[in-house]
Image (cartoon, rainbow, N blue to C red):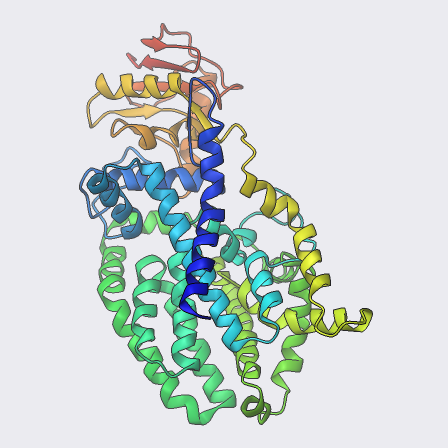
Length: 498
């Protein structure tokens, strides 16, 4: 692709990705502020809170979603960096987030297209499946399929709308494979930096994929595979080593990591690994044995066979790690499985399309299926039809600002997690007692104590100074009988004098 075409591709992708935020801003009702939320509401708000911490000048992160004192830790560098950029540029946190999301997302799409065009059969179809992943996936929110496998496995889609740090992983994965496939070893250093900056445990998976491929199919590539793996490790050290040491000695990091555990029996994991990608996933898994049995000599004739083998190894190793890895968040080894699924599913879909049409290389059928299937999942979020998570009321923000002005930094707030998740986004202190399922220390125990606190009119033992309810989200939570110290139509605040 010529440089002019790359520039046009990038500008177009950037504009499409930024559009939902622009629409949300334009449709902001009077008396409300836009949240910037497009995907993953609870986690998205934590990203903005981390940026706020960076905006205040910090390069290490303390846990702002729990009241316990927490030691600074070298994590969330990406969002802290965005916060520093907001401080230096004077732009709001939301604008910096969405500009970064759109720039990095456009780069991801450009790199993915270049990778498909260079290494993959039927690049148009593989490119689209890699982003959207499925044909017939039950929409997000379904109690049967959603849980976490959707977010993890379809990261190529979710990073474009909400989980912006995934874009670093996305480009790092492509850089690692490009280093191996094109013998451009220096790219492995960049891959190691990217993977370690966000998810260093993914270094367990991706360098191993190319090593296994070389051992199984291309012994003459083994030296290159080892070189790429070692260079990725070298690039990872500046970020991975401090994180590893912090996890060894900082107690709240251990608790937080354990709370990311998502229990799931192995047979259900396999069920979701296959069916969460719908027809495309089923085709890809079914093609793995066929791809692995192909004559090795074909790699010399058609280089994309090599990429198909790499993709098959990727899917098998990821599934094994999701089931057996001794880590609480092992489901995250399923990151970006939509990419190898696109590589493996595209040839069969195109061949099927050719059989039922008279025109060779007719991509129209699979492309139409993609667009129709994902109308609800992709087009509607891109149009960003506003909902209750798109805006927060000015009155709620004013109430939180009042709380910040009348409290001390060491104070804590009794609240439901639904109210608590807002607090670090808008104010520096006090911190919520419960707010986020992974980051709040002893989350499950605290959720029950908060429930008892409001049911028993403040008689549960929670020795904190303030209690807060946000009416937008806490509609069914009983109010305390005490006299509020601050109240408007959207928020009520009590001072705990017990």
